[in-house]
Length: 224
Ligand SMILES: [Zn+2]
Ligand SMILES: [Zn+2]
Image 1 (cartoon, rainbow, N blue to C red):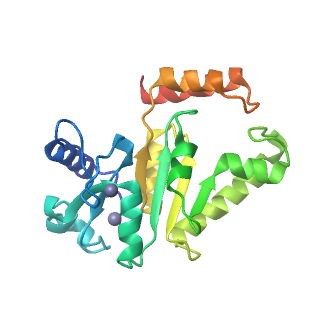
Image 2: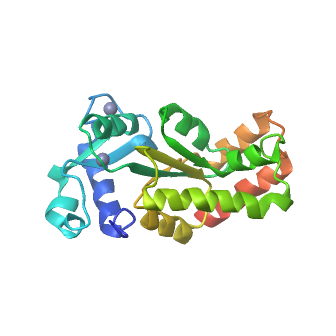
């Protein structure tokens, strides 16, 4: 429905401006619970009058600061659950390898949410350790992944909230998926040095050399 809206320049510029404008001493306070929002990526812009296929083109609604609340991610889900919004919310959580995407999503996830994390799909069908990804299963894993993405696009199922977790290092592909799914983008903006540090200290059996390369590649695509 809201084709291109959440990745549009106008929307992104407006949200950046609102964050600056509404911050006190550099801190944005949640307009739902009143508490500070610690991480930039935890700030969700919520439309009070919900966007529809028609009013998304109406700047008085879609881009009106009075219709936009800056809230915690968890508060956003509360608002949507409580007021009985019927439209499910879809988040694409992206960022470099080892940036903390999964940890963040785990802290937000509720029972009944749909989680699409390709690492977990590999794990589910290989019977091996997490991060062992035998190339012979690529077609099958991608088939599962695409089926789930299609479910999200069609809003199949009874979930109210979906998280799609991945590196999504390519900006164009990332924005195309966001538009296709009518999703909100959440960027886990952990600096490269921190990602590398976490990799060095993680003990989950993944190949450090491979993952160092993935981190390098991600930042080569996204600057930094
Ligand atoms: Zn809050
Ligand atoms: Zn909302």
